[in-house]
Length: 443
Ligand SMILES: Cc1cc2nc3c(=O)[nH]c(=O)nc-3n(C[C@H](O)[C@H](O)[C@H](O)COP(=O)(O)OP(=O)(O)OC[C@H]3O[C@@H](n4cnc5c(N)ncnc54)[C@H](O)[C@@H]3O)c2cc1C
Image 1 (cartoon, rainbow, N blue to C red):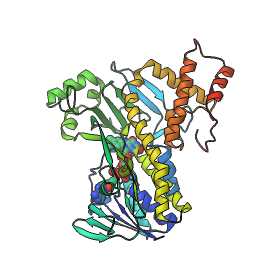
Image 2 (cartoon, helix red, strand yellow):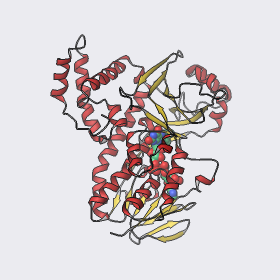
Image 3 (spheres, rainbow, N blue to C red):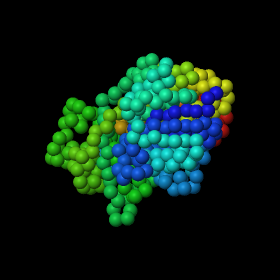
Image 4 (tube, helix red, strand yellow):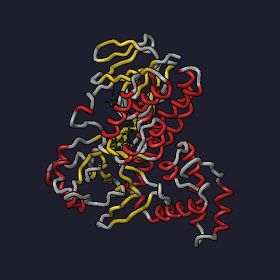
């Protein structure tokens, strides 16, 4: 097998893959990134400012020896959702029932910088910044960069995000799913030297057709994201003037005006981002190319899993490389093993938009959610709520969907009783319907 590889894109998944290929497989890696080196610029023009990192991402970072005590210091734990109702009351919904059931808010640029530096620490990795790939010729083994032709020796990994130039050549079909909603970021500044709202929760202002979420930052600010329709009545398009902005927030998110007095400035100055999910129908080309991360499976951000799934890709590919004798068989196995999980998390992410903006307000949903956590307490090897499986375990995403369909039926059955049945009855219902899981960790 040729011990050389190229990676296009040095966002989140590119450098993690470079670390694994160079450190674990002694492969010489050449990376190409269209932007300049973010470690040398003060502004960061990436997507969302902060991200939720959970078990799958952490697991991958550990495998690449990136996750250590210094890294942990960057993380702010969020133990559940803080729901902000229209009448300004708040209600906390925990993510799980164990001490380690929390997700972590982390700065996108900080993770990116750490990964780039760690990749470069390996003598086998070189990164070419300000080098945009415009095309790849898979027959002649050429990459087209800034109008230069660069021949490649060894495979090319497309880690160039949801508008991947490599995917355009590798994929048989790209299906872009646009949910017609967009997003805009706003900032809740610190008050003096403190956070204005609880830093250990992911805050949600659910309003059925739209929502605002807020994740804490280390400088005691919060990055808020408003998700709503891009066009039509009550949409980003319909809010144009300072007066429109204040009247929109007064009607829908009153308490945010107190938290963000200059909300109009953020609204007018920050761009409206698109929420794109891409179904890429083929990720590999012989022994020559393979897509990872968003290039292979960009998803909507509502489960906070895009980066986590992209990191998971990297170590799964690295593990498969240990078992296989050629790049071709590695890529084939990777696609076969991973595509169904990518489809599953894409489906779960779409579904979670509805959960976050609407269902968290619904008493039936809340009762079911609480019962799920109780059943998990009673039968931890059998009943694992969907959110727990996705965020706190490494159970393959497609298995999460399979198991959750059964669990949903179990919950409906139990809730159809007039009162909560005795533990023996519950045990019978649960154990008869769902198999025991030998979950190595965190179930
Ligand atoms: C609003 C929002 C919130 C999100 N929140 C979360 C969250 O809480 N948790 C989570 O896990 N995920 C989240 N995500 C998803 C996450 O951002 C992505 O899944 C993740 O960035 C994917 O990493 P990547 O390396 O595959 O792609 P990217 O991070 O997009 O990196 C791609 C890199 O390739 C470079 N590039 C692109 N084209 C070229 C080219 N032609 N030539 C050279 N270089 C190129 C880009 O400059 C970039 O550096 C969120 C996404 C959005 C939009």
